[in-house]
Image 1 (cartoon, helix red, strand yellow):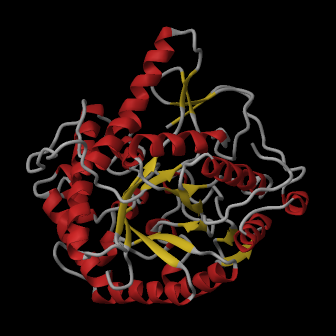
Image 2 (spheres, rainbow, N blue to C red):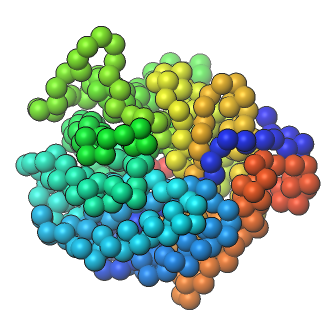
Image 3 (cartoon, helix red, strand yellow):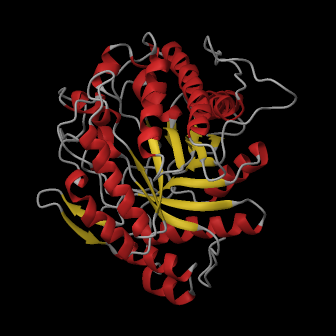
Length: 445
């Protein structure tokens, strides 16, 4: 429970998380630049070609990150930039990533690199994407090239970001490229993504043996609750949605055990030996909100605190999901994403206080949350929502690309410096901050 007295985070590494497509800019031939060129796909009509111009401003951003005392940084590499055509590698792009990774390490910031964060080359997408012929072989080729070229400066990897969000957006609800709407197809892609992680896990460890190599997945988890606990349909639908959205895919990727409705793709062997296998060295947890279930989508009831996108603010859910991950899989938990859309910076400091206090609380209860990556550093291009939502500790003027540290950014920097919070910090940054409340029942994709 968050109190004004403060709390300690001793031992938790604090930092920020980003994704290449959302920050780098440039005319990269990816699934998302193609998608943004199609009318009506992005809420404000914007494109990732502008974003935060991080591809050219990475030194400025890294210096700013270091000045705020960040200890860890989760970033991704843009597959379409590194492999613009099948089997052809852009040496200059690899050198650019190496330079950034070297500077991060010089500044004392430990990098965690994501290999697939929603975006993929347009040639891969047009060949059928994850359901195309040889997709897993193509994926392994990419993983091997990146780890071979960057493995001397990176030892910590996320293979795939939020496979459940990617699948539901791209193949079930059609909000992400390629815009398909088929639950059956989505379940097939789920299975292939699970296999992609299992193969990448073994491959990375083979290429980069040693105790410092850590590989995992950034899983999007949320508590699910029935809209009316007395309604049997709500209760059944809640259990079904949770299993389809997160439980089955998490189990497959973590242990290699495929449970219905997932199916083991050809070429992926059954787990051997006694007991479950393990295909993760940490449990990556992306946490934002919870879902209230009255039908087959993401629901928010009236009268609860929400952010600018109408997502319920429910800090206790971070503890609930972290505890479940630890008790189910016994892996150290890294909060690989947590943040909120707040353009006015009206409540982000309160959001940080409440969620970090949950981290402190559950650690005291024995759940090893070792890292916390805030989403995000500088306001970025928010996928199909475009440039509207503002998640950054640092505000961005898209027209001038000027960065301005928000009060919440200064607060987070102080938390990192002090290893926790105090009553004085609460008075200066948190007191009086109020969340808006939802007025009507809302449903999101």
